[in-house]
Amino acid sequence: MPIFLQNAFFSRLLALIFGLFLYALGIVMTIKANVGLAPWDVLHWGISKQTGISIGTASVYTGLVICLVIYFLKEKMGIGTVLNMLFIGVFIDVIIALNIVPFMHTYYTGVPFLILGIFIIAFGSFYYMRSGFGAGPRDSLMVAINRNSAFSIGTARVMIEGSVLLLGYFLGGIVGIGTVLAGLGVSFAVQQVFKWMNFDVKAVQHENLADTWGKWRSKIISR
Image (cartoon, rainbow, N blue to C red):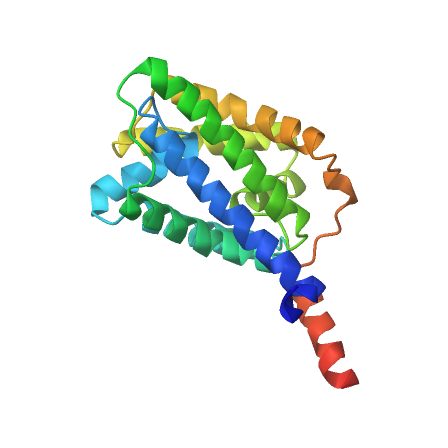
């Protein structure tokens, strides 16, 4: 085994990046399923259509805005939050540019392909959540709203995804049966994958940026 892989930090970092790649691959599959986009991707597609930027770039810019919001809401962010914001959008554009994911032309192939994509997203969630570097910007926004209001986590998610779906629709995002399946199916798929992988998300102690910096600073000083 290479020496750098024996370092717990770099092993976790690779797991995080691998998870983000899987997440992006799953998103591209749901796009290529051609039966409607997930709520956030409806927004990204609408922004892309109105501005001419790629859907991956739209995802990055959206994530950046969300990071600014959660910063002002005093929600802690980790390396995973920042890399989630950057890498998923980059990976989406790379995968689309490589044209390695086929385009579905009928509902009979599109719906199963979308469901497969949803489970790929769930496996991506498993790897990046297990790394312990913090939640993604969109999940952090949901938690921040929950902590700063009387809304439950579930209500906060419905409010957020409903709002971005509506905005994305008016911007020209693609809505269809896949939108409903993705909106309802991702949580189910994540629960199933976590069960299959025997993963208890509550057992993970996520590091924020200050925690990670503190660990590296102590190592540098000890040397």
